[in-house]
Image (tube, rainbow, N blue to C red):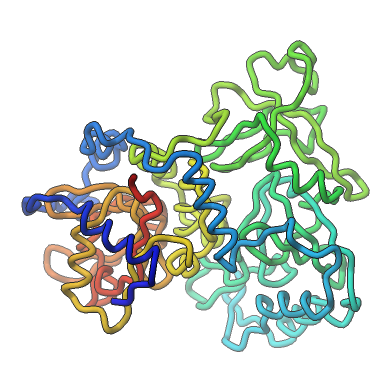
Length: 469
């Protein structure tokens, strides 16, 4: 087991010090008819897990000052977090080329399209040509924009969906992530047809369709997510009020952690033909016909799940926020208007103001997070010792996947995770694929990575985001 210096040593100590001082009672896992071992209706209720924490459930783990300090450390230390304010006034062709080629590398393996046909080499060559690297100027002024609606980030400037197998059309290998309304980006380059832009966002660099961007002045764009007062989405998703007067802002989908500033308007002013007294009037970025930015007022109903500040970071809130996604379909790279495992945990923590990297690999190894790392030299005993010390909110990583701990039943730790798979031993001892394909609650220990290895045997990292005072 490799322990990183400084913060990781502290984290390892915390994992031991904070471990339960009592022996856990063996738990007899039930085998319901649905086949997910150890899970009945009671375990699908967040109050079940909050109740097990007792008086500790609502204890603040990190206050606002501590979270701000942790986020500042993340921005300073983690190379996957991008400070847009620190970008130069112009970006050289060399820098732009490095960023683009780092992401948009021509695939060498066989890929399949939605019709289960092999993607021709000519199509892949065309995608490389669409990068228009030959059109990069020696230096280009950095332009800034706000994202105006939920938009996919892509490996290449294309909506073409491609898959590793002709039998699996669920995981689109060109889907990277998604950005939410109000997210600032820096525009680095455009595709040959001008319909896509390569952008730097706070947590990712990738291609986005230009129709989702509204270009504005640097200070306006970068200042938008800092404005106060604001509303932050604390539900899984909410929508702006329907508005025929403002089609660009009508029924706009806002995912958990999306933050929009309140508009400065008279309380009796009609907003898009509607009195606003039963709603919050927020400022929404919209795209003009020329691609420019306009800030327009829109309504968020007061009875939807939003708050005037980020939620306190408590174990109860971690559980309740995570369970708001329970049953949502798994969406690789935020596909299907949903999210994947790392997007799930990062949005849960973001609703409490905590910044995490976008992808599992980067989360699991981030230099600014408290973590215990494992490799092929880690012993079974070391892994078991760490598992026994798991607490609510801890993040458990295996290759390509992350799970969030929600509590214990006897000697069984339970997790909630956004998974497209999941396998356990059936009553006859045979390995059974569960095809969970969504946000699911499971015990950790029975989960099998393959025929011979459990998930815990393949752990690469355990991260404790909410280190206690």
